Image (cartoon, rainbow, N blue to C red; front, side):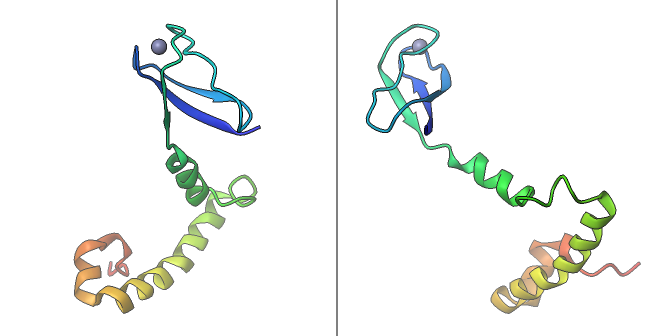
Length: 101
Ligand SMILES: [Zn+2]
């Protein structure tokens, strides 16, 4: 069953409700009004997906993650340099610069 996030227009309470696509949302758990605004809240889910790719997060040790990061960073950087130019990347994303020390 899909989940939706709602904001109660009466009291500004935000809550998550689970209900069928063609069903009405439940009333606000705080004030029991049914005047709700559905929120678009896919962003946190997407962010979680990026930070912990499915199947890798729990299995990987810290060292594995670090070596993976060390491997991926130059590739990512190269892509950005191709798109934005060396100067822009050095300026805008200093954390991607190769370590010089
Ligand atoms: Zn409310």
